[in-house]
Length: 251
Ligand code: BTN
Image (cartoon, rainbow, N blue to C red; front, side):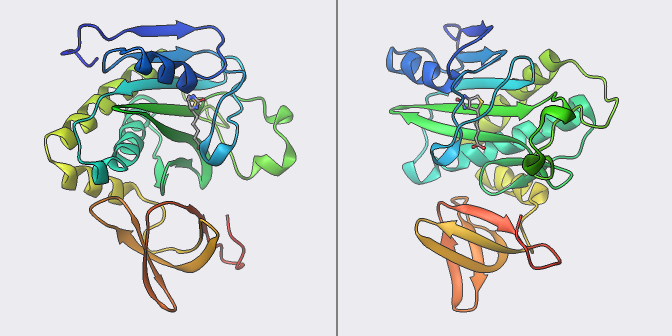
């Protein structure tokens, strides 16, 4: 992986507070691009918007990769989208499951959240954190989460190796990251669009302290969400999207 970076390390932990936190520290200490931290468990896994990411032992893939992108600042958000596409392609190839992408960082399976991506900066480095639910005991999942989250081995006898999936994610991530660096962002954006579960859907979007409602018409060249609202098109650079269900509720 990241074959042209001979200094890149692969660290695998049994338990750690957060692979992202550790990777940010390594990035500060000049760790090479492609350095990857994985753990079988996280005790303080971090999610977006200050949330925590529940990371019980051997229940998911928890990994963080250090990148040192030579991209224009306005293209940095594309790293999150490229990582989403890479994860979807890897899961499809190893597990044979069709994954959707929900703007901006969610991996979706059967309309439920399967995983998420958390990109954090340690300038000039970037840490790409990936969390994917692999195995949970249905009985121990809180009732209110059963309809919202899912995991790769839920209700299927899909046989795959978690290690093979982690390797496939790194392989695909390298490929999509290199496309970005090579200026092929249209291909990354088009692949993201074709996996999107948002485009064409009615949604509500919490962006800062604004709650917007409208129909998603696409994403622009910077990966921002295009939302057609009653008062015109809004371009949303950061926010959280909920999709409107047939009964008018939002998921
Ligand atoms: C989200 O909120 O959807 C993003 C979740 C990202 C979780 C991953 S697990 C590996 C890495 N380390 C962390 O502490 N968080 C990310």
